[in-house]
Length: 193
Image 1 (tube, rainbow, N blue to C red):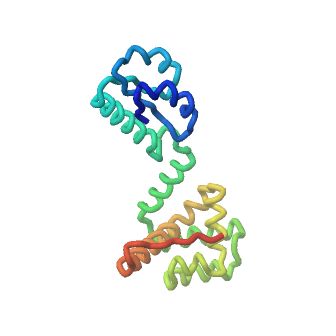
Image 2 (cartoon, helix red, strand yellow; image 1 turned 90 degrees about the vertical axis):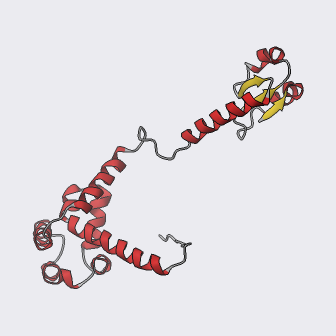
Image 3 (cartoon, rainbow, N blue to C red; image 1 turned 90 degrees about the horizontal axis):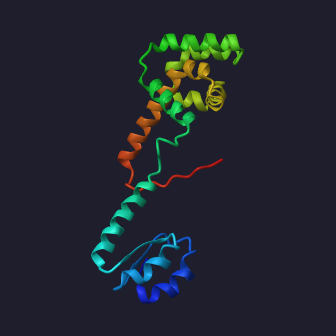
């Protein structure tokens, strides 16, 4: 807010507590008269006799405000979020043998008793016949196992299912690309629980 010196002493004490008001700049022809009482009000950024210095001060304060509003500060990022992002990126970059990965997942599930033998055999024999979304949404253990691993940050489960996470991610990305090409530029998204 820019206010003239004649009005400043009357209006500033009244409005200084407004949370919407961040900074006050006083424009007055006699700077020394207002300096003492203005020092007691933290929102007063300065007393100026010309408009150009106010414009420069506004520009500097606006840049500082913009910097303060950046949504992600690397000093304050939750470490778990960073580790999760790094793990996701690593999983998406790994190029491994799918047949071997499926076999390892099935063996892991046998040891953990996470699924019936019939389901494990079906995955071993038919995994490539269906899309990752089909497996994820089907009546199998994959949905619950993957969600449990992600919820508990169980790295063993996440790594054993890494190939599936990668396939699911790539499939969703491909479906999005196909639909995006045929959709208008605005997309309305809904979230359900």
